[in-house]
Amino acid sequence: MPVAPSPARARRRPVRPLGVPVLVPTPPGWWFDGLLAAALVAFTAALVWWSPLLRLDILVRDWCDQHRPEAVWLVMQAFDFFGQGGPWTTLTVLVSLWLAWRHRTVRPIIPAGLAPIVSTILIVSLKRWTARGAPHLGSVRLFSGGTEVEYPSGHVSNGIVYFGVLAMLLAPYLPVAARRLVQWLPGVLVFVGTTYLSYHWLTDSIAGYLLGLLIVRLLLRVPWRPLSSQYQLR
Image 1 (cartoon, rainbow, N blue to C red):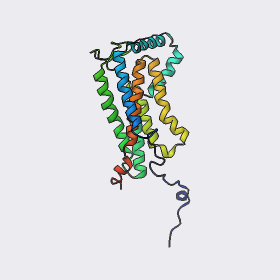
Image 2 (cartoon, one colour):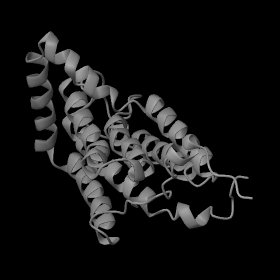
Image 3 (cartoon, helix red, strand yellow):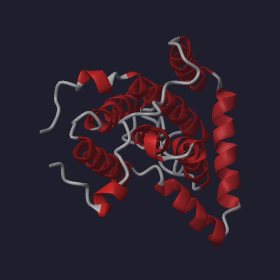
Image 4 (tube, rainbow, N blue to C red):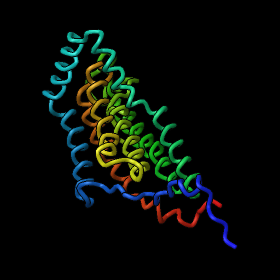
């Protein structure tokens, strides 16, 4: 004789399908990825060969240094925190582990694990190659040979990449407006905060934004759902 489900079990919400709705690169197609990569290369070349960009960096830094009341400084520090790699790496991994346990699959761990690997390889490689100083330490010029490595801004890139991954993982649980805020707002806040605080040159932040968009689009393209379908947790 079948046993009727308990009231608590009957009231429990069913588990939503993992990855529904699915986030995809917008606009679709690889042409925009190529455009972002070309823009980053062209922008880097312009910093080497077109001195007005360097003068703009110095002008923005000096203006920010002269217009930094304490209340605004505190707000900008909060904005800059959204670009810290450590806390947001930890959060994305924890969210992916929770989803892996909830859905009995390792699939969510794949994008969360790839994000810091891809970001670290690309950002660190570019920073060491360009060897640019910070706004108050070292040279404004790229390839200056100093020990500072500020270009592109890893903070700005982090603000796009990690929150883009969070939006992808939590897409089934968030309304569209909330998902878009999670995906896009932190990167903008970090851009404003780190530039205003003179932690990075303006052009560092622009390059970091371009690189972050490219990385998150690449992560959205990873077929992590079918790739790991054979690795179901029992």
